[in-house]
Amino acid sequence: MRSNYLVKDLLSEITGLLAPHIQRASREAQLFVIAYLHVDELWLLTHQNEELQGVDQIFDWVHRRINNEPFEYITNSVSFYSEEFYIDQGALIPRPETEILIDEVIKNVEDTNAVLTFVEVGVGSGIISIMLAKHFPNAKIIAVDISSQALAVAKKNIDKFALENRIELRLGSLLEPINQKIDYLVSNPPYIQNGVALESNLSYEPQNALFGGEKGDEIIKELLDEVLRQQIKFFSCEIGYDQQDKIRLHIKEKNFNSIKFYKDYSGFDRGFTLISV
Ligand SMILES: C[S@@+](CC[C@H](N)C(=O)[O-])C[C@H]1O[C@@H](n2cnc3c(N)ncnc32)[C@H](O)[C@@H]1O
Image (cartoon, rainbow, N blue to C red):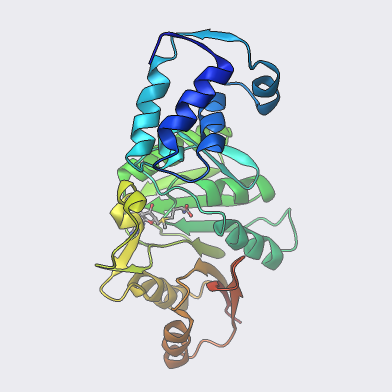
C-alpha cells in the first residue's frame, strides 16, 4: 500500500486484494472507489489517470470486505426501489424482494390520495414506510420496531427524505405501541427458524431481524391474530418460502376468508395479502 495512486492502479490493487475472497472483485473495487470518492460511474471511467492522495482508509474497507462484511454496511449505503438509503449494522440490509411487498400494497390501494393510517411492524432501516409515505402523500404512517438501534437507522433515513412529519417511530413489540385504528398493516418480520445455520455474511446483521422463533413463523401468526382481533382491513406481510401451508392452516382455524400469496423473482412464495371483508 502506498500513499499516492492513479485511479486505475488503485482499482487494480483493490481488485487483487479482493479476488481470492469474493466473486465480482473487479466490480466491487469500482463500487468501493465510487463510494469512497463520492463520484459516479462516468467520473471513474473518464479519470483513470487521475492522481489520488490520502486514500489509505479505503484499504480498511477492503479488509472488512475480505472478512465477509456486507458491502452495504461498509459504505453505509444501500439501494432500494431506485433510492439510496443509509444503512449500518443496527438494521437489516434491505433485500430486493421486499420491493414486491411495496408493490402489493400499492396494488391494493388504488387511490394514491387515500387518507389512511398505515402501521409497519419491524421498520428496520425504514425503507417500506418511506416508500409508502412517498407513494401515498395523504397517509399517516406509524412504524414500530423492538430495536432502538434499528429505529436510529430508520430515523436517519426518514430525515434524509424529509418525512419526519409523515412517519412516526415507536419503540416496542408488534402492535403493543399502537392504540389507534389501523387501516393497513404491513410487515417484513423476522421469519427464519431459530438455530438455522446461515451464511457467514448474515452474522453481521441483527439476529432479531432474522430469527422469528422456534418455528420461525410465530411473529407472522401473532400479527394475523391481531389483525383478526382488531379487524384490520388490509395486512400485507413477507414470509419464508416454506411457510404458506402453515399460514393457510392457521387462518383456516380462525375463519379468515381472503388471502392471496405472492411469489418472489425466483418463483418462491414470499408473502401474502389478507383482506378482511
Ligand atoms: C426482517 S427485518 C425487516 C426490516 C425492514 N422493514 C426491511 O424490510 O428491510 C425485521 C425487523 O423486525 C424487528 N422486530 C423483531 N421482532 C420484533 C417485534 N416483536 N416487534 C417489533 N419489531 C420486531 C427487527 O428489529 C427488524 O428490524
